[in-house]
Image 1: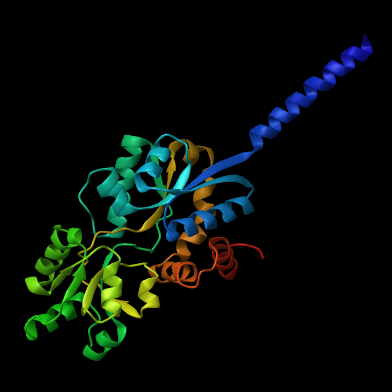
Image 2: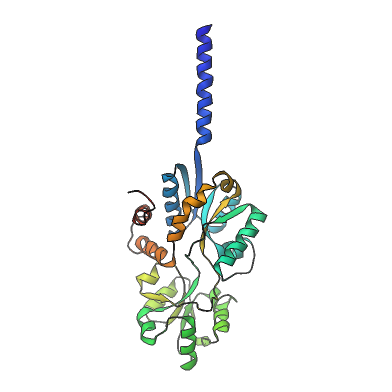
Length: 300
């Protein structure tokens, strides 16, 4: 009888200890969309969280809508997303150019309506940009969209512009740029094409200017320059972490853990990371780990 009692006690103790151990386990699911920049952000987040004792399940390669639904349904605990996407696409709000205002607005509405918390706002802004070839811009002394407007107005609007049809016609696209900066491309000089081909057209000197995305690797690969949006027309698409309310409340330390990474993210650093993967064909894992080590965010 004593032997049986000892066995039962041992089993109960083992079960109790196992339960306590499971409750101490820190598990997190990190999501990512289906393009290189998102793969990199997810992998860097995974590596940092693992370094801080989390068990991480990484779910990448989702479309934007699918990832957002997974976050709302708590199939994903956190992801890097963009303030402009949150405001305009998910919440149906008007775009906001000033990054802090956009961040505070998306956080306020998303918390109240969906229990989604936004943290770790970064300087990296994957918004629209107007591009020129670096050597051509240097030759003409054009560094900003205001400079471009002055040149166009003083020289008979000579430049052509590569764009997709959507940007050419939406109010927060080319028409808004022209109205804000006070110049215009002639109808025959607006060259509409499939998204992506605009980079090739600018590189091959088929046009003088083009729309682009500020963190695209081809900007560096093709030696383009992003003209400064000095009147802050384009909406803020700054990268930040979006997480579920349960994650935010259960693991409040995540915001502090991820802040050093957020502080390293800029347009330039993301373009370089995208370049290493998309142009030089390095693996996402290697590029992510090397970046974290080089910036003192991960032990070698």
